[in-house]
Length: 401
Image (tube, rainbow, N blue to C red):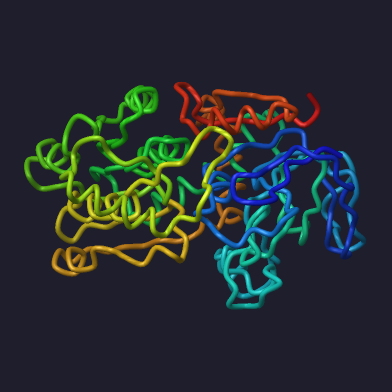
């Protein structure tokens, strides 16, 4: 079968690999009908999320059809349409039963303290082969797979594999209440759905901070008030928009590989952040689209978030930050009595409800799916996605094309 395989930083290839086989009674084999590309994949390719194993199939978002189920899988049959959660969970440990599937005790072969297991990730996440392939093995299929309701398309369902639950989780972490004013830092795919999730959870106003024109336009189409950090200092703009009070809640949907602002931060501060990132980054960080220039997002966005939120406000962090990021403006957080929550999304906990919402016509997240590419063109698609080409918001891959 065809699959996208990671070999080294900056080196991924579309290759012929063996088809997956049932390895345990609780496994299922799924024929992938739609996969997707995510910013987390770029972290792996660039090396800002270290520890990838040569030969690992990447990708953690997919929908498909069950083609084989192990003897321990009692609730799915051949031909069932399913969404595969990005994170892997057993379904029966105390954490899974409490809705914390990202902290499952059993999914990660590294043990109970190893952390979140997910498809297509580094060895610390279990080194499970990912979903940018024609077929995939899904462990713990009885509770990992989620059935797709009638009337929900692949384009809609693929958004529920990762980014819609993650955005919803971010709004939950931020503790949004009815009437709150919310700032969303980062207007990429997850940020766009964080805007939607904030409104659905009761926000009265949403302010979106980014600098990509197309992403800001899409945020404005959702009736978010937009702030371009290349043309104005975002904290000052937020203070102005809120009468000097700040926002009630912040959702950080940025992550480690965001671009450095052209303006909005003093030049010497930007240089310091860039120097820190260049020292931490491995050599040769490329994705085939040119040299990656590290940004200052890990420090800058966390500072903006802490400064922009009102006293006694709260911050929800869903942007991906590896364990190598060790700085945070704890002094500002302490002095303002802020609440900060962060974590990997418990996808399985939120997926059934979001699929029902889509099936009932309440939302259509497929509107964010701007590119649908055949998997044979995946290398070119990654280059365009990495460059943040205008209009490239969310990219689906079609293994059958």
